[in-house]
Image (cartoon, rainbow, N blue to C red; front, side, top):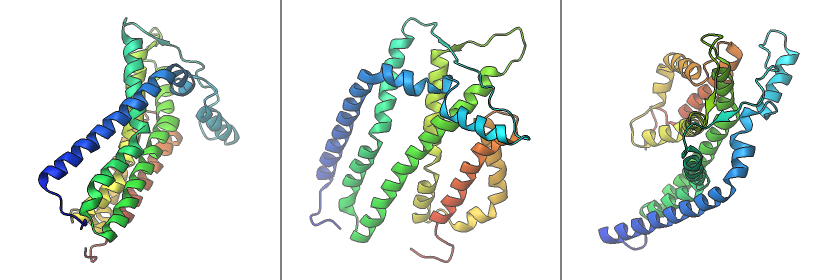
Length: 264
């Protein structure tokens, strides 16, 4: 345990300072994000709206050389957003700066959590938990990058080009675009925390590796449905691009869970 025992009020005071430092970090990054948001919006957030986005070029190269794959070279070029509410652009500027700050401060927030809980841990527990926090941070960023670079652009192209009737013209509003963008990026970031959550449940004795083996077939079906919902496309190639990372997460989660015959 820690060298000195802390009272309840000492813990409360430490928690207060932890929260204060976290809020200050969020504010600093939010101000930085607000200052650079026009550039971030044009070159990063709006990049999937352009036909030269790296994913579209890569998929075009892949599908062009394989005849039985769907053609991804005919990507709808330069999607234009419209704004129909007077305050939307200003509010989007503010809210996106906050989400930008939340992503960038994730490593610092994890560090603050680690610093708060570490005095209550034994030395061997500190070593394990330190790597867990680092792993959780890395996996969150990987999930966000996959959401941004793969899942959102493919969903955008499918839904924007989908037509219920030829007489209906699609026009994409700023609010609709940002709602889907933020949701996709953060949902994928949270989904990639599944191995970390599995490890935590395992440490509390709530999850065993036999669970993953027993329900693997059901998990495959659920993940296929989830991939179809995340990327509502009809071709198997697009579906598999989303499904296989999710399935690898499932298997990785099983590796982080102790076997049934292992004790704490």
